[in-house]
Length: 350
Image (cartoon, rainbow, N blue to C red; front, side):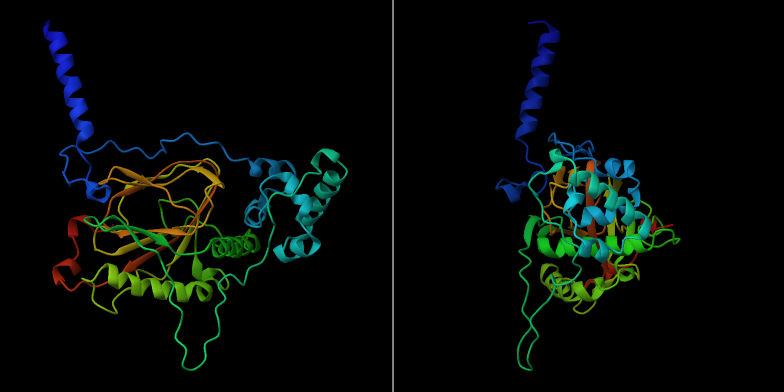
């Protein structure tokens, strides 16, 4: 056997053995935990080929309705032909200005005269911005109903969990609320969707700015905080609070967009990140959260939440098409072990 053949066989053997070595937290899959000394190459693209989402933005641009994309999409419009199903009341409820309203009417008239667009309506359109978070009014002695967050462990060693934060109806209401506010704030500096809160994402919005969003979500988030104490018993009871006045906040990706590079949300302190997806998986392609230490891409279904500590390195996968909306909260806390409360100076933010 030649030295070259021998070397090739050796490399093939090493590669085959490497496939048998489980990644960190493989105990979650039933194996034994073995740490690999090699760091996985970071990839922020989804491995499965996905179909591109219909380009509604381009269609609206061609009709002079480019500023209506957000509120149209949140109301259920996915193709230009869906506009013909919008009612007078829905258009009024959107708060559409007179100029855009005229363009919508023009498109509706053209579609109604075009037999090829008389198709069966596949998706229900809605502009409703209340109702999904309604709860029963409690009498004096009744106890508040507890939400089942269906918390599941992805990796206990690295404190990575998933759960269900919102229902589909609640997600869609939050999307309509945010886009209704954003449309009204078009032309107002640093209002609506902005890039002034966080540097990693292009479009974000503080929930406190959206009328009704904090009152709608506060019971669920209060109960989630109680759930976090059970998940992290080392935290001092009563110490969890929002990291800053801008929390919680929304993030939006529209069309082809770069994800986020590998980063930590807070490597100076051991705080908690809560990241919920408000979009359905049929609304975008790409996306997902890559956890470096797990070498794993996590993709959530609408309303699901990813929970991890702020010092966990992760990255956001590129968005290929469509609209992806997120609800994010950064929580500060105090730990029973006071050493965990001291800042790691070399990781301090600028």
